[in-house]
Length: 420
Ligand SMILES: Cc1cc2nc3c(=O)[nH]c(=O)nc-3n(C[C@H](O)[C@H](O)[C@H](O)COP(=O)(O)OP(=O)(O)OC[C@H]3O[C@@H](n4cnc5c(N)ncnc54)[C@H](O)[C@@H]3O)c2cc1C
Image 1 (spheres, rainbow, N blue to C red):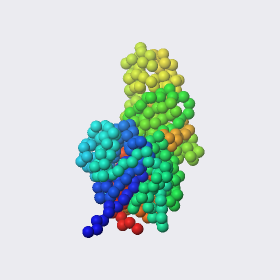
Image 2: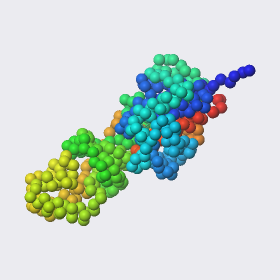
Image 3: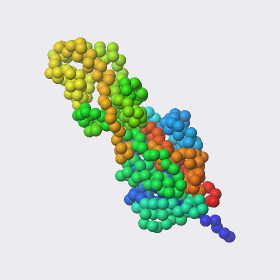
Image 4: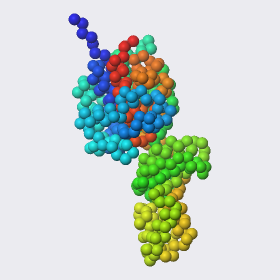
């Protein structure tokens, strides 16, 4: 009796895409080796969602696809085959119960990204995946237009019937995602959409942000203005840093800010600190506070309206003396205060680099990949998964879902594909 040998699959890169691809291919009966260049897998995954891992979003499929703009069509078949619901069920089955927070963001109940990495690693090993760390791949071995293995930087060669390339993007390179996959794929004949940082913090002029550094604002509405024209707005949380602005709302708006800067427009961010109050209601509130606490200094009265750290900045930008008593604040000063509270403007002059970007836009062009099975249209038996592909979305768990879905499809397809 002749026993058919298990198909040999090499997965390059042990992020969420590679781990999912590896454990699924192994579950389907393949003999899988995962090559990871860092000392451990899932370095970036461990720091996602500030260590809490926003692993997906509960949004409906149509909303989900919209987050990927024109790449929605490419990612759709992967989401069909492994949806957000399927991912949640997958983690629940593997002892990682989840919870859904504001904006449909799904997290492990334990708030621990470490639990997500452990579950994936445990399952990969249980399914028989051999995980080799400290193994940096430098090129693919290609014969007659088909991949036959991968070569490490040490020169060691691993033979394979199929290879899944899942080396991530080029952002946060300290986690191992240094853009190697772009070079590996290019040497095999693939093109590249230029990698750019997406979901990046932005730099602002002057010292204002620096004075407020460390301060996080919740429930604010932030708008982007290009040459005085409003381009977009977002509601939620933001953060001041020593160089400018960060936090979820700013990261989401960073694409529009970057486009505005590239076009050469005067680019500004306007923060509405009191979005729940219109100008009229805010004026009544100011009048009431100034009257009720008329004998107190304005810097004290403002404690009812603003975080302590913002008060000196507010008074300096509105030109109201800090020691002025509530009773003596003039109508014009009150107007300046009201306008500022609804429209605190900061000039943006740049975006931070790839090092600090949450995600890389650009990568392997989607037209070179079969969206049904993640296979290369250029090299036989080669598959792609994750951020390496030219797909990226807003914050909210969409990017991890894309990594898991494309990883799932690449793993399943590689295991079942007819080797040519
Ligand atoms: C700070 C931060 C927070 C984030 N938070 C979230 C979040 O909460 N929710 C969300 O949806 N997304 C989040 N993201 C984005 C998300 O982490 C990525 O989209 C996701 O990790 C991409 O998965 P991947 O497997 O494609 O790539 P990666 O996670 O980058 O993994 C690629 C792996 O390949 C390895 N590798 C690279 N080159 C080689 C080589 N030559 N040989 C062998 N191995 C190699 C790397 O070491 C790495 O382990 C966050 C990103 C950052 C930076």
